[in-house]
Length: 255
Length: 299
Image (cartoon, rainbow over all chains, first blue to last red; front, side):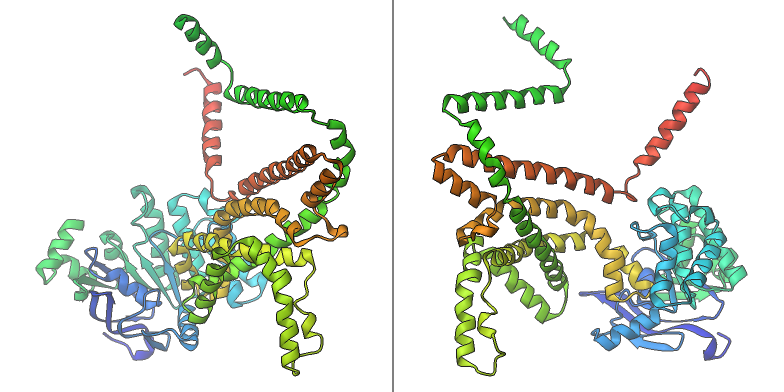
């Protein structure tokens, strides 16, 4: 891992997460550097989504700490002060969900503008302009006045990406962004994600089984197995010559 | 015989169902009218007195609207408290719901109207540091006491409706709002509550309609002449003229009409709230394009 700690956007240290007696994440350390795309993959139940959800404290870490953009936090009881710290951390993190989670009570444009408006990120005209630019970037400028229910799954996910980008995050988390889509719609979402990396140099953590995307876009891949990172490395190495039998078995199943 | 019956059934099947149910309604009204006229029902008396009885509609409506407004506020606060992890808020809300669901509405009305004033009086007599006029704070007029009792009582029931409505909003919605760095209040106001409203409004409409009818209970507190609602008025004139049948039928019809009216508005509101969720327009678009294609050329 090259670079000084200043280019680390996300630092996960000694992360454990249990749900009741079930330990899902059993000690994960991972640094993500500025502009880097890290693809996280592994069998379902291996803890990869949970790690992602711990990064912005949608799940509370049982042990260990998360550092984003210089804000370092651990788990534990959410006091008023803690809640505000978590909110500050979240302002640096964009998240895209498997089920899109667009707000059905708002138009596409309002979905994209509501969070920046609440956070006071610029004047009303700036926010509106940025939202239009982002919708244009994901190819949906003409859908601004529609309600999400009128869009296809692929279109909804692209709006969700624009919505997260509107907060100008330091890192984007993608939690299986194409798993809920019909096969013919995954391409449009993946290509938007690719341009985020190539054109905007966005730092990204992506949980996905799309190995084609990983090979093309990822700088680094991390294979999760039973709550730990079993191995990691650049896609060229990891896909071509995995060191562990588990990784090989999984790759054979998805490739 | 069975042959004839078969033919009747087949003939009946050709008549739209709504027409048939409508005919049943008309028959029921005709039957009731016949029974009424045989029993000496005095239609003229109703015509003469309806104006006076209906004059109480505004007080019935004031009470119901005031009650539902208070109930909505109580239900919203109650529901947020019930789902909150704050032990004080949660405890108060649990106590409130338990008490107001566990005691009769009429008892609550009397507690507020008759049992509370002595509390103010006695406290003021005992503690002289209480502000001047404290003794009179709990002296409520009948309509105010009725509105507060209705609001608190229905608010307790509606707390559960609101709580269920809030919890029916998909968890992912709250997660998305959290992930975007919204505060709790922003998330509730802009994301969760607007969506919960779709679930909350239909049963709230039912509660409002039920409350409109329960305003009749206020008359037991002894409504003063200038704020008499329809039930009290019907009771008075009916008793005075020995026209109890006519008076209670008249007031029943008024409540019924109000209920029908508000059920209609409620249905319209529900449809309006459904916008942005239903995909019926997609079906319509598909049908339209299909029709176009059919019109364009023979299949």
